[in-house]
Image (tube, rainbow, N blue to C red; front, side):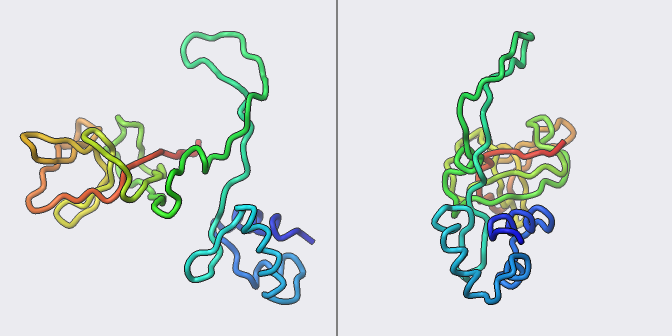
Length: 186
Protein backbone atom coordinates (compact mmCIF):
# COMPACT_ATOMS: atom_id res chain seq x y z
CA UNK A 1 0.00 0.00 0.00
CA UNK A 2 1.05 3.57 -0.64
CA UNK A 3 1.50 6.25 2.00
CA UNK A 4 -1.01 9.10 1.88
CA UNK A 5 1.66 11.38 0.40
CA UNK A 6 2.55 8.85 -2.30
CA UNK A 7 -1.13 8.24 -3.08
CA UNK A 8 -1.86 11.95 -3.51
CA UNK A 9 1.24 12.51 -5.66
CA UNK A 10 0.44 9.49 -7.86
CA UNK A 11 -3.23 10.43 -8.23
CA UNK A 12 -2.48 14.08 -8.98
CA UNK A 13 0.12 13.14 -11.59
CA UNK A 14 -2.25 10.68 -13.28
CA UNK A 15 -5.55 12.63 -13.11
CA UNK A 16 -4.37 16.26 -12.93
CA UNK A 17 -6.66 16.89 -9.95
CA UNK A 18 -6.54 16.25 -6.23
CA UNK A 19 -8.14 13.03 -4.96
CA UNK A 20 -11.17 12.96 -2.69
CA UNK A 21 -10.90 11.57 0.85
CA UNK A 22 -12.67 8.39 -0.38
CA UNK A 23 -10.17 7.96 -3.20
CA UNK A 24 -7.26 8.38 -0.78
CA UNK A 25 -8.80 5.79 1.56
CA UNK A 26 -9.16 3.35 -1.33
CA UNK A 27 -5.53 3.82 -2.45
CA UNK A 28 -4.05 3.57 1.05
CA UNK A 29 -6.28 0.96 2.67
CA UNK A 30 -7.65 3.34 5.30
CA UNK A 31 -11.11 2.29 6.49
CA UNK A 32 -12.67 5.73 7.01
CA UNK A 33 -12.54 9.32 5.84
CA UNK A 34 -11.73 10.42 9.38
CA UNK A 35 -8.60 8.23 9.34
CA UNK A 36 -7.60 9.90 6.07
CA UNK A 37 -8.30 13.32 7.58
CA UNK A 38 -6.07 12.52 10.55
CA UNK A 39 -3.27 11.37 8.23
CA UNK A 40 -3.65 14.54 6.15
CA UNK A 41 -3.13 16.81 9.17
CA UNK A 42 0.63 16.15 9.06
CA UNK A 43 0.80 16.80 5.31
CA UNK A 44 -1.09 20.07 5.81
CA UNK A 45 1.36 21.16 8.54
CA UNK A 46 4.21 20.20 6.19
CA UNK A 47 2.68 22.32 3.41
CA UNK A 48 2.38 19.38 0.97
CA UNK A 49 -1.40 19.92 0.70
CA UNK A 50 -3.87 22.55 1.84
CA UNK A 51 -7.63 22.77 2.22
CA UNK A 52 -9.74 25.42 0.56
CA UNK A 53 -12.67 27.20 2.25
CA UNK A 54 -14.95 24.23 1.48
CA UNK A 55 -12.53 21.69 2.96
CA UNK A 56 -11.41 20.29 -0.39
CA UNK A 57 -7.77 19.41 -0.89
CA UNK A 58 -5.63 21.72 -2.99
CA UNK A 59 -1.95 21.29 -3.85
CA UNK A 60 0.51 22.78 -1.42
CA UNK A 61 4.18 23.30 -2.04
CA UNK A 62 6.06 21.21 -4.50
CA UNK A 63 9.10 19.39 -3.22
CA UNK A 64 12.30 21.38 -3.72
CA UNK A 65 14.33 20.80 -6.88
CA UNK A 66 18.14 20.66 -6.85
CA UNK A 67 19.99 23.61 -8.38
CA UNK A 68 23.20 22.24 -9.89
CA UNK A 69 24.83 25.46 -11.02
CA UNK A 70 24.91 27.67 -14.10
CA UNK A 71 24.93 26.97 -17.81
CA UNK A 72 26.03 29.45 -20.45
CA UNK A 73 23.45 30.65 -22.94
CA UNK A 74 26.18 32.46 -24.88
CA UNK A 75 29.54 30.94 -25.70
CA UNK A 76 30.18 27.39 -24.44
CA UNK A 77 32.30 27.02 -21.33
CA UNK A 78 33.39 24.08 -19.18
CA UNK A 79 30.54 22.96 -16.94
CA UNK A 80 30.89 21.24 -13.62
CA UNK A 81 27.99 19.66 -11.85
CA UNK A 82 27.97 20.97 -8.33
CA UNK A 83 24.98 21.07 -6.01
CA UNK A 84 24.73 24.74 -5.21
CA UNK A 85 21.29 24.82 -3.58
CA UNK A 86 17.75 23.54 -3.65
CA UNK A 87 14.69 25.60 -4.38
CA UNK A 88 10.95 25.17 -4.36
CA UNK A 89 9.36 26.28 -7.61
CA UNK A 90 6.40 27.52 -5.57
CA UNK A 91 8.66 29.75 -3.48
CA UNK A 92 10.46 30.99 -6.60
CA UNK A 93 7.35 31.77 -8.65
CA UNK A 94 4.57 32.59 -6.18
CA UNK A 95 4.52 35.62 -3.91
CA UNK A 96 0.83 35.66 -2.94
CA UNK A 97 -0.64 32.14 -3.09
CA UNK A 98 -4.26 33.20 -2.51
CA UNK A 99 -4.16 35.66 -5.43
CA UNK A 100 -2.19 33.41 -7.81
CA UNK A 101 -3.69 31.18 -10.46
CA UNK A 102 -2.88 29.73 -13.87
CA UNK A 103 -4.48 30.28 -17.25
CA UNK A 104 -3.99 28.37 -20.49
CA UNK A 105 -3.10 30.62 -23.42
CA UNK A 106 -5.09 30.42 -26.63
CA UNK A 107 -3.78 32.26 -29.68
CA UNK A 108 -0.52 33.72 -30.94
CA UNK A 109 -0.78 37.43 -30.23
CA UNK A 110 2.04 37.31 -27.62
CA UNK A 111 4.59 35.07 -29.39
CA UNK A 112 7.26 37.77 -29.57
CA UNK A 113 7.08 37.98 -25.77
CA UNK A 114 7.69 34.22 -25.57
CA UNK A 115 4.06 33.34 -24.80
CA UNK A 116 2.76 30.72 -27.24
CA UNK A 117 -0.55 29.00 -27.91
CA UNK A 118 -0.97 26.23 -25.33
CA UNK A 119 1.41 27.74 -22.76
CA UNK A 120 0.30 28.17 -19.17
CA UNK A 121 0.71 31.58 -17.59
CA UNK A 122 1.01 32.09 -13.85
CA UNK A 123 -0.80 35.29 -12.92
CA UNK A 124 -1.34 37.26 -9.74
CA UNK A 125 -4.64 39.02 -9.19
CA UNK A 126 -4.02 42.48 -7.80
CA UNK A 127 -0.30 42.14 -8.46
CA UNK A 128 1.85 45.21 -9.02
CA UNK A 129 1.93 46.33 -12.61
CA UNK A 130 3.07 49.36 -14.54
CA UNK A 131 3.23 50.45 -18.12
CA UNK A 132 4.99 47.69 -20.05
CA UNK A 133 3.78 44.88 -17.79
CA UNK A 134 2.14 41.87 -19.38
CA UNK A 135 -1.35 41.76 -17.93
CA UNK A 136 -4.62 39.87 -18.11
CA UNK A 137 -7.26 42.50 -18.73
CA UNK A 138 -10.93 42.88 -19.49
CA UNK A 139 -11.38 45.31 -22.35
CA UNK A 140 -14.91 46.22 -23.38
CA UNK A 141 -16.26 43.00 -21.84
CA UNK A 142 -13.68 40.61 -23.37
CA UNK A 143 -10.60 39.06 -21.78
CA UNK A 144 -7.08 39.01 -23.18
CA UNK A 145 -3.39 38.93 -22.25
CA UNK A 146 -1.27 41.78 -23.65
CA UNK A 147 1.28 44.45 -22.77
CA UNK A 148 -0.22 47.39 -20.88
CA UNK A 149 0.72 50.65 -22.60
CA UNK A 150 -0.24 54.32 -22.30
CA UNK A 151 -0.55 57.05 -24.87
CA UNK A 152 -1.60 60.58 -24.02
CA UNK A 153 -2.55 59.43 -20.53
CA UNK A 154 -4.90 56.69 -21.80
CA UNK A 155 -4.23 52.99 -21.33
CA UNK A 156 -4.37 50.50 -24.19
CA UNK A 157 -3.23 46.93 -24.83
CA UNK A 158 -0.44 46.02 -27.19
CA UNK A 159 0.11 42.54 -28.64
CA UNK A 160 3.58 41.05 -29.09
CA UNK A 161 2.94 39.99 -32.68
CA UNK A 162 3.14 42.38 -35.62
CA UNK A 163 0.16 40.61 -37.22
CA UNK A 164 -2.16 42.16 -34.58
CA UNK A 165 -3.20 45.75 -33.91
CA UNK A 166 -3.18 47.42 -30.49
CA UNK A 167 -6.48 47.35 -28.61
CA UNK A 168 -7.84 50.73 -27.59
CA UNK A 169 -10.84 50.43 -25.26
CA UNK A 170 -14.12 51.95 -26.40
CA UNK A 171 -15.70 51.86 -22.95
CA UNK A 172 -13.51 50.17 -20.35
CA UNK A 173 -10.17 48.54 -19.65
CA UNK A 174 -9.68 46.80 -16.31
CA UNK A 175 -6.44 45.05 -15.40
CA UNK A 176 -7.35 41.88 -13.50
CA UNK A 177 -3.93 40.29 -13.03
CA UNK A 178 -0.28 40.60 -13.90
CA UNK A 179 1.63 37.77 -15.60
CA UNK A 180 4.39 36.46 -13.34
CA UNK A 181 5.66 33.45 -15.32
CA UNK A 182 5.17 31.39 -18.47
CA UNK A 183 5.21 27.62 -18.25
CA UNK A 184 5.80 25.47 -21.32
CA UNK A 185 6.37 21.75 -21.66
CA UNK A 186 8.62 20.53 -24.46
